[in-house]
Length: 340
Ligand SMILES: NC(=O)c1ccc[n+]([C@@H]2O[C@H](COP(=O)([O-])OP(=O)(O)OC[C@H]3O[C@@H](n4cnc5c(N)ncnc54)[C@H](O)[C@@H]3O)[C@@H](O)[C@H]2O)c1
Image (cartoon, helix red, strand yellow):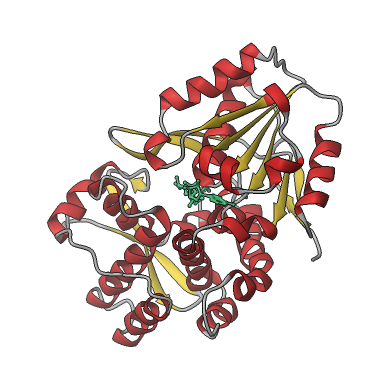
């Protein structure tokens, strides 16, 4: 698979997303990328126990294995990562590596952004969601009592090493989560991608693998135009304002990707109510998720969701900014005024 390069305005000015055929070639590339630098590798316990990758390379005492899950995405975990970096005597020439899904990818990215005012980091995404979305674009951070991802920094990785072979141990529910973000990419910017996803006979590692690069390329194009989310990058938040509220209300029992799917359907319904889109669009968006057994109806009332949305980052002049779909491949901003 041909690699992708992301061009950005800051430092680094560009970085590559390298597609690795096997975990063995990934290991080789990772060693070459770390070179002679001191380093810290972070992963979560599920990945450490399930993925054969750590049988190839155990990284000795440079490896930190932490508990999995969104509930771990907090300041206290970032401190554990920073403490380990100090224990290993990392300095400004060192490198952080996240071999993980989006939860640790975001936190290791943040830790590397603040450690000694910023050191390089490498993303090795292991979940589908991390491959197509969170490992690309440099958004890092963690959750706090007031909401999801409310504390963070933009810090671009120096490289993303993507090996779809990691997906062989990923639970099916997690494959669904990544698929939801891929569908979101299609709704936001690419009808052909949406249709390719829609026409898959089933959702498996084999059917999704050929579409991973296309999905990343959609994000790449958007991030290149708007690295710090001053404009169109915000479109990628389709479904996220509703989705973050749903995740929070469910006490994170509803995972991120599936909350985004619910959020995409809610955004489509809202757009229809505001006469921005059609009932057909709602049906098409609902149908793609339901085809692959992804539930899109949640138990929370609209009032509860709107209340939880108040802390969302995507505000402008005190108003919540929603992203609403007008058609497959086209979205727009909508500022909520009196709905809250
Ligand atoms: N930075 C961004 O731009 C961005 C974009 C989208 C989402 N996110 C964030 O990403 C997070 C969600 O990411 P996620 O869905 O990857 O969650 P995650 O990191 O919790 O991974 C999901 C689950 O899959 C397991 N897992 C991951 N890879 C595995 C593998 N290869 N084999 C076996 N098990 C594996 C993990 O242990 C975990 O239980 C959220 O916190 C969200 O806010 C960030």
